Image (cartoon, rainbow, N blue to C red; front, side, top):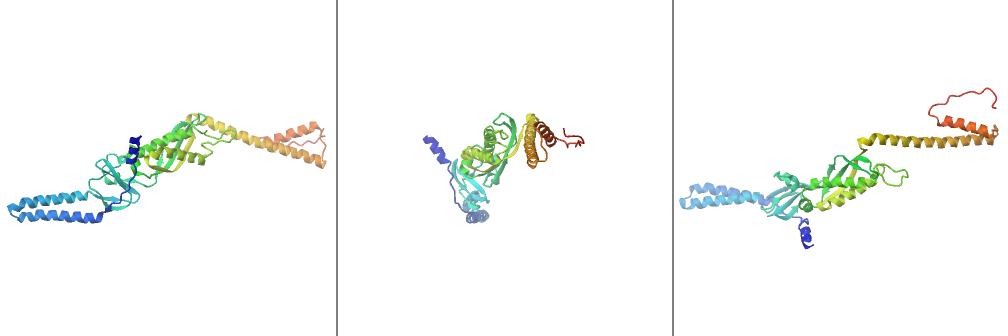
Length: 314
């Protein structure tokens, strides 16, 4: 337990406030000029001073060149993580021109083997991760394709650099795992009772749950999740046609149910008005025939063709 606490302490972010680099730049330039002048003036010296002047000039030039290595430039919304002899020295988050210990080296494993100073800096900007579509199973076991867009940023540079191997690939992997975890907890579409969340019908709630799930997984890497949204959601190709037919059938049934409810209400209203106004008296058999005819007209897919009865009603 003590070792774990020490490890956690070593990765706590330490903000550095280094000196301005302009003064050290001027001093380095003066030392470099002095070293060059010493080498030039040594040519006119006697043999006794020649070796001393040359050695002194070379030493001054080497020291000036070494001091140049401590000059660092940090742009806005960037951070520079520094290590000193293999230990975490601190992080510069303030933009500007600074001078630090020349023995310090910038460290960013996400930059790979590239030695460019710009690649060694860590971006503090909000970044977008658009994960590729992946096939998962929902709560009902249906294969679906789902893809998410995650907006994230680094808030703790020490954790991002030292606690994970590569924080960029780490968040991508954890997003894939979080998608699978959330997707199999909810159905693709709303169930018949309609009292539970679904991936398609509860996008806002699912997005918030997905955000919290990803945040809990990337906390160790010092990453903050600003937003997580489902960018693509569809049934897998092998069942897409069958599910489309199922959705169409459900829509047709719902539409027919509304049509029947409306038709019954209209027939009831017609019979009631005929009876209340005393227009015609119908026995049960004629009422049944009238109801049948009206339902056929109101519920049919095509327009009814009128037939004029010129004879007796009975």
